[in-house]
Image 1: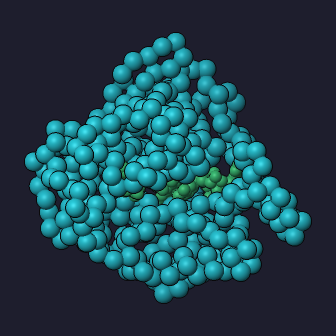
Image 2: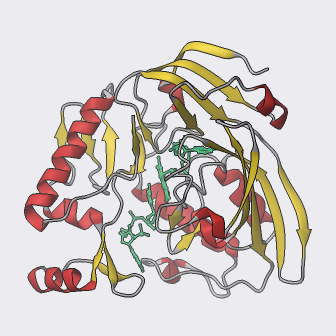
Image 3: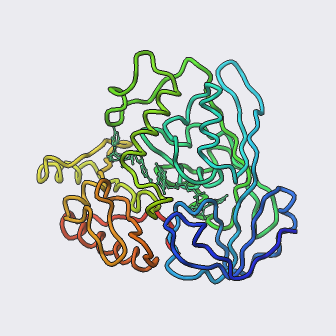
Length: 333
Ligand code: FAD
Ligand code: NAP
């Protein structure tokens, strides 16, 4: 039976570095622990991985279940692909390194995203033109309310831009214990359309080159959460109707707009924040990053409420200037 800790310190467990505690805290490090979990029906539950997409604005009054199941395994292969499984508690970038080392493609653009494998399907992590949904074969979960194990096929997961059913109807109910990925054998189709990735790559690039270039860009642009607390992009890029995007383009010719599914377009939230005068601003001990204003930062000793107040201020400024309400990507508690 995993031990239940009382008044557990969450500060080292969230990348914002916010001081908070959990009333009860359980670490699940083996599948054998699952049937041993106490009846959680009555309590307020929060599932956690690496705490890199969470903002605590107060102490958590309830039970936090942290996923720590480890292990990466090759499960099978065919001519074009290899099936790899990873425990929900595996560090995401450990899996990317595992894949790239074996020349298995499909997740190299997702290099050095913080957090766990179990959280990757939750918001369908994405970066530099790749989304994890395109490699997921199936997701194994444990239902904290019924004690049943359930397997979701890729289709069942309801993936879309930074979303899945695990973030929607099953949030904090289904604990993702293992994820199966279908990774591609060479020859690889590299995704190099974002920014200047293509220019930086050598001739005949490999997936290792892509990983190295993306790692370099990210390290030069984004704050290291071990030094400056943050949770990556605080807001999602807004997706609007094509007509709205065209109107905005007429008013603001410099606005970065990217076509999405039919009739929709994605707008860079970072640009909206910058143009609203919120790049590199500080409010108390919270700020927006001077190189990437979509990232809210803890300047040292900030409370979760201070970060959240800044987020609300930024939302207000963008709404006033552009009539667009930015939606948080980070999970606020
Ligand atoms: P947590 O923060 O612990 O949890 C996030 C959410 O997932 C919560 O709702 C939680 O309840 C749920 N959850 C966690 N584990 C499980 C589980 N096992 N079962 C069910 N639910 C679970 N994200 C991107 O998409 N692309 C990026 O490029 C990116 N870059 C980032 C850069 C930085 C510097 C930082 C700090 C964050 C970045 N993020 C990015 C956000 C974050 O890394 C991802 O969302 C990541 O998947 C969160 O993993 P985690 O284990 O830390 O999850
Ligand atoms: P960027 O390159 O400055 O671009 C700004 C935004 O424009 C990005 O968010 C991206 O949307 C979009 N974009 C840029 N080029 C595009 C293209 N060719 N086609 C479609 N959309 C395009 O962004 P950045 O902040 O340095 O981040 C680079 C990548 O890392 C992005 O994919 C971003 O999502 C990811 N990232 C995510 C987080 C997070 O916490 N979620 C944190 C850091 C970086 P998308 O975001 O939809 O890709």
